Image (cartoon, rainbow over all chains, first blue to last red; front, side):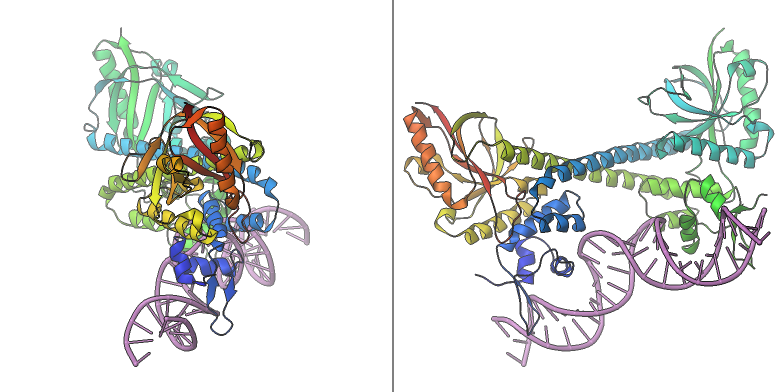
Length: 277
Length: 277
DNA sequence: CATACATTGACGAAGCGTTAGAGTCT
DNA sequence: CAGACTCTAACGCTTCGTCAATGTAT
């Protein structure tokens, strides 16, 4: 029977010397024989089988502790449960990664929107798709208070979103709403904040849909100028023979992308759905 | 301006006190004000913006160090690169997880095959699908040596598979081949090992395909009895008026699932493609 | 004897969680 | 004054990678 040194064993099994030493320390894979004088570890070729299994289980994402328990017990019956558990774990990780991917893509999109946006205040009619949002009513008008109050409302929205298990992804695009009825009365009051959610998101309490259609849009990068820009948007709508077809949406396209020092630094896209009157 | 205690700040931003303390220590988020007497940290509501950004970037999988660099520089231009880099990283993680998922599924399937297998030696004709494999020729007959030699050949196969960047997944189902020509001459010699690979795996050197078709199959759980079982398989084929249509395949359905103590402990499915003569 | 290979032990990394013992806010 | 809150400091977790100083195989 060959005596296999630690270096050769590592090479045979496509791992490293440190890993083998580590496995020895934690009792996961003890060398077949240890020289009493030198302390050198020697493995037998048969131990590759155990090491293969360790590496395979590790590849499946199972922790070394669990692997050890599994290998030290002779109970083979637990294997299917272990495997199923891993399958579930992998699925949830996959889902999480999908969300992350969406989030990154959304950030990239938002960043590009900011880069390519027309100058603040320029008004355009854009065709926008149907969108879904989770709406939170804070019962306080954000426009008659300071940024601080807005910030506290954001905190509440975040907490609600958390309770509702909305993934972090969605918190990238927040915004505020003014209902059409209020808008028609020239009341600029908003107590509602929202986050856009996936179009596949299941309908439930707080989830609303705004329809596909033409929107009068303009960009604005200052919280306190929003009202002015919104007023101009309304003037534009009446001057050009449109009428207001739905709720006013102030979408914060980017704030996380801009370095926040002492306060939030938002870039907003104001939108009012229109139709020819 | 409110003085927000660490506990309240944690609640507002949906994180923990320890996290905030950690961020303070590493200079990622310093409290607005620290009481000189008590050492108590107090935050301002405006700091939520920075914390939001930190949490969002963390969610994107960016390390705290990178986040710190990013937030401490005023250079906003690096953002797109950072985001793209994250997108790529997520994609590769996704791919890896998909592989893991396949691997787990394969293990579950194999386990079930073992559980539901007919008794060793019972012979059945089964319709098996087309399969792809990566074949490695070790130039030594595994059947005229000990298990140790087989083990060393496995090591070589593994190394080759590694060089070819075959994912670990595939190493779950290994096996050996005897070519039809050798089989017809009643020669039981195999120098070739293989691993099954995905059917989508690109064709290249060493990749072979075995066709869909009828196979005479039997199960065997002892390396040294394989030859006997294979002989009986051949007898069965001639006795029942079949003829050998292709290469003999010895598929190791499970060995990782069986606890290996001193040596590999294999459960094999022997297969010979047949057609009516 | 040269050279590659082996040893132990300790520290580091990422991002906090946890605990202990003591002080502070309301 | 009670009870909730906060402080610092230090260790723990996970899976090895990376020295450093030194001994061994061939």
